[in-house]
Length: 111
Image 1 (cartoon, one colour):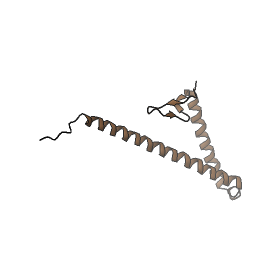
Image 2 (cartoon, rainbow, N blue to C red; image 1 turned 90 degrees about the vertical axis):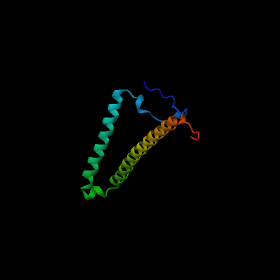
Image 3 (cartoon, rainbow, N blue to C red; image 1 turned 135 degrees about the vertical axis):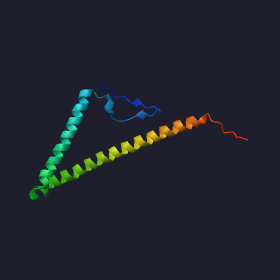
Image 4 (cartoon, rainbow, N blue to C red; image 1 turned 120 degrees about the vertical axis):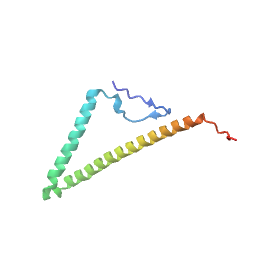
């Protein structure tokens, strides 16, 4: 069962937002299938509509195209931001390990 209480991250700050890991396995599959189906249907609808000049100039179709571009752009930007953040965390973790490995070394002058 999903618990909507705030979880604390390692740094002590509350983890705000929806966490995918709290969903049961069957809900994950439903979300994935539903998301991919919507993506495919929107792509097919846009492709068929763009071939007809009357549909292409229809205001609801133009608004749908603008909305679709916004959703796709937001999704891609989110994926890039998540990848960048994971890279920063990885580099930060490696830097911390390097700093810890040098912490025991002597900083004395070798004279």
